[in-house]
Amino acid sequence: MAARYGLRVVGLGYLAVLLVAPVGLVFWRTFEHGFSPAWHAVTTHDARHAFWLTILIALIAVPANTVFGVALALAIVRRRFPGKGLVNAVVDLPLALSPVVVGLALLLLYGRLGWFGPFLERHAIHVVYALPSMILATIFVSLPFVVREVVPVLREIGTEQEQAASTLGASSFQTLVRITLPAIRWAIAYGVVLTTARCLGEFGAVSVVSGHLVGRTETATLYVQDQFEGFDLTGAYAASVLLALIAIGTLVAMNAFRPKEETR
Amino acid sequence: MASNAAAAAVVGSPRPLRVRAPVAQGLATMYLGFVVLLPLAALVWRSTRAGGHGFWAAVSAPEAVAALRLTLVAAVIVAAINAVMGTVLAWVLVRDRFVGQGVVNALIDLPFALPTIVAGLTLVALYGPRSPVGVSVAFTRGAVVLALLFVTLPFVVRTVQPTLLELDVEMEEAAASLGAGRLTVFRRIVLPNLVPAILSGVALAYARAIGEFGSVVLITGNLPFKTEVSSVYIYGQIQSGAPGTAAAVSVLLLAISLAVLLLIGAVRRWAWRHGS
Image: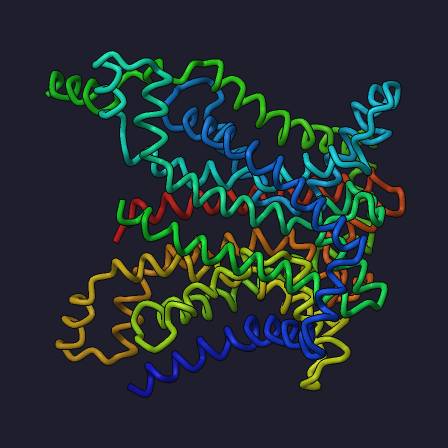
């Protein structure tokens, strides 16, 4: 009995010191003078622009990675083609890369001295230090999640039902929409939740390619850093709490989707 | 035999259906190449432009070496702490019963969902220069370890938990009935079954730790030769207009990450063969 309580105290104590106390303190600091200073801090022009930009980027990156993620998962599980092993490995790569390295790679491709730099400059297309590179960076880092969630489910459901459908005369599109997609819908939903969380929280890669232009290329996470370094703690804490609330919402969504996937 | 195998091959692994047109597959592969491979190719190309000597000069600069050593050593410490605490937490979540267990279980994933810069800010608030509890690790190497522990918390817990759930309690009961003590049962029965999962989680945590950026920038102060990790060093080189140096160190970091990824694959296959 003593050992059990001992482990419980050690485990929960570790969690409290590392996770709960720091996050709790930021919530406390944000609301210690009431709700309105925090509300004012996240509704300034720059803060609103930063959150809007984060949402805009997610609105482009999440659907792109969902559609192509499902297509990639189908290619990995259902098809055989040369270079399939490479595709499978490359999908995992963003998980193992430092976000700063991702940002640098994009600079070296689209930046002034990059491969596409001269071409883009000649046609006055702004990619680096502008929205396109921030979207590309976010898509890069959040690419694996839908694929990783859908691949094991596709493996498990097998092809019998799809074959039955096509034997009965269903077209390939009908089979996809009526058989395959419904079977993997919870995996897709879970992957989308993870992708969204990653997109909204992206910092390092976007920090490198955005140029931190206040009110122009500053996302919510960059705004937190700039406010903290500019000694506007109220602004930094309030924006952090808003991001943390979104993260907690993500957790709730994750827990809502996961059991369904398991009892499938 | 042979006809059975042939029949199994026909039933078990049918020809890939023609349902998903090759066009979709081609587009998806192109997307992957365009989003991931092309930028990385530009990165590797840039790192080799200065030749072998230039590459070596970039990665062997004293500040770069100090940053890399700190990154790798801190990641080892973090991985070791995670191996122990992650297993303890998984154990507490699976074998213990207490009020609020569901909430604790959900909290484990919070570091995955929380933006890294927010994680860093919360740590500065509690363990920074203006710490309300009077404990400041700011601008020390302890801060690097603390930040990395925060962001890597879920990995070992989430790999060990399912294994522990599937583990047959009867084995432990049998050992206990034969006179084994609690510690002996854990050491001889439980732990050997968990090792593949722990190793897999530790490798994931290590890979994540060596590339971490957002959570360390606020609390470590990014002091060269002291608290500057590799990703922060690369960031500094980009900002000071030395993309070649940044690219060389990036490629080295990339190579280490790839090695860890391959190791994870090897551990998984090993665990598969020694499946419990």
